[in-house]
Image (cartoon, rainbow, N blue to C red; front, side):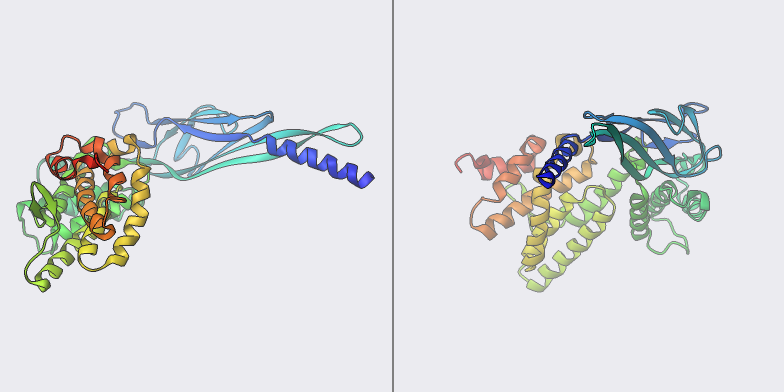
Length: 379
């Protein structure tokens, strides 16, 4: 009987613990700081601890920020124990932020006494805040179209320890190399400016933890660079039928296979210079299917179809126009391949219906989805 009572008490206490599930969120005012962007202005980030008690009692709050307090950053509001803090960042770099909240749950012992048991909730964010620099020298060189000098000076910044994790020097390096390519400039140190621009841009994106490329001046350039690759390497090589793109084909099987392989190389390169590779992946899947690589194509569709169906309007709106164009072309090409593979529109229909509102005014989309398939209205 005593064992049964003890077991019941344990079950009641365990149920009580399970019923009380506090949550912890970290809310920040921004993720990217540009030190010389606001001359003598605000270079601070406000961060809030949002703790939902759910019947428990909060005991303490603790913030941990990487770097050295006083040298790399300082509190301008609150301190390590505050629920709301404001941090002024002084040095270029990526900063990790950890938030820990300790809370207590009351429990009643068998003798009737009440005691509290403490637990911890953590939020750990690596490279949570990016502090960058406008690098006015590089900005001016780009504005002056002094591309060869821009390449050399940006290269100097990429090896400085201060900018070890900053994507900005690589962004300007890519801009310089792309300018050399566009202007057909010659320099013995630059062998393949377009390929080198892709590599520099890919490095910048890899290091861009928090959206430096979302700054309008950089996003506009990235869009143009992506369009250069998408249009010259994919769009202008595709064939056309009734106003919409179809996969390239030639009477020579060898020529067809060679051209499709070249497009796949471009797809691979494009995927390294975007945060949103879904569109180019749909292009790749269609090309691979037509190049007799059904296994890889099917794996891509298996991954990207659910991703597409879960894509929100808000996230799509943040894409570059090039990424949106790649998705439109990829969906048109993939729909053709899937209809051919399935012998029906069972898989093509939901993905086209998902994207219909995004491309409803595009002439290629209208030619394919609305005219050819009548928006699947009879399906």
